[in-house]
Length: 385
Length: 95
Image (cartoon, rainbow over all chains, first blue to last red; front, side, top):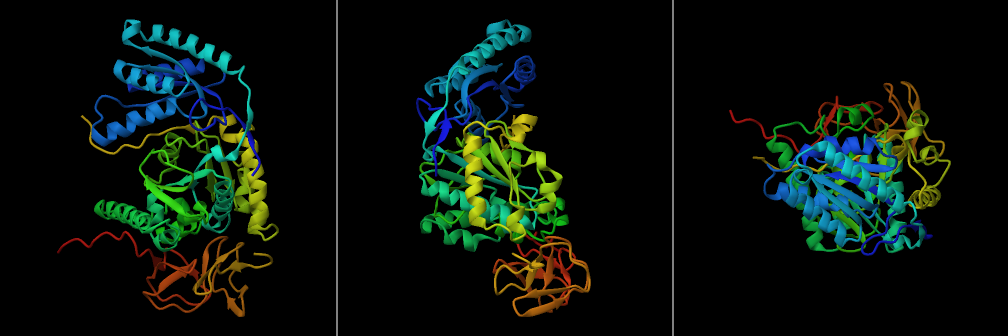
């Protein structure tokens, strides 16, 4: 696999973007973060709706994710705003340690006046956009890439073409020293056998099975019929009849190389290769699990079309459904209808897709970036005060 | 998938996937089998390759994807109206 043009970081993975991020770490200041971002060209805005009531594991994941946004490989500078000074300081310190440009602004330091905060943050963010625009990309090895693998609004073509195609691309990246994460644990249910066959060892196999069994118990305990929820009504209309059928198609995204381990929601994988993240299946939460784990890009397959992307990871959207490719062209970075109709081999399509991936990694914009369809959604895990 | 109208993913599968919208009366060829369709099968939906008794595991990718809930005839549409997942089924409420 060829090198790509990216931004070298003082530590950690390289950037495929060099964003200025306006990050609100408390729900009270998120509207202000949006105001600041509206006033500037070329910034990404993220904010939480929560803060002080979060408890236990939920709080740990939430705070960890906010720090991970600030330290994301694709972020060059971050303006951290918030109404909770210790959290602002904690997130800013993490970004500073990661070598990012950082400005931390609390409401407390602005006399609790949100317009003063907005003015300070706007000026700081404008300075970062200006400064970061002078940095240049350099040639970097693909081994620095970590991909998040997602499928959304799947149909049976996803399991026949788009997901196996992603798997073939993942095989090529892993062979070049890179890494990938798949999640969506509910979509392991019914696919345990082929999944476990790829586990690096018996411990990983047991953890994969246990994670799938735990999700299955959660669905049972909720008393719902999973059919209609996952697969959703959209999946069903498109021809998927059961979670088993959807899962067997979904896991093809992970390719054929050994699964190195099972990681928790938002946890960075501790090494190269393919990793399984035990995580919710809904795309916004699932993608944020990958972005907070430090994935620099996402590969996202769809059956009928799906406009959602990550705000921090350029998201390469693809389909193998010829009808979808005709209908939602300005959603797709890549289409593999020719594989579906038998006019192109999966291998040839995978080579083309690697080229597309490296182009996007090197700065070519995705439709999702151009249209502003990106966001991040941190999963919630428990009761709040 | 060249030239075919439906695809069987594993030799042990008892369903195949339509590669285009297929009409009732069309004949699908899978290896040496010729299956006459009893009804319309939309793109990507499944058709039965054999007569399936109620409760038969439906197999795709060489793996079970659920069970038939009624008798399903060869050439019929196989979907949520005549098959059901065997996983994550809520326990029956206590009487």
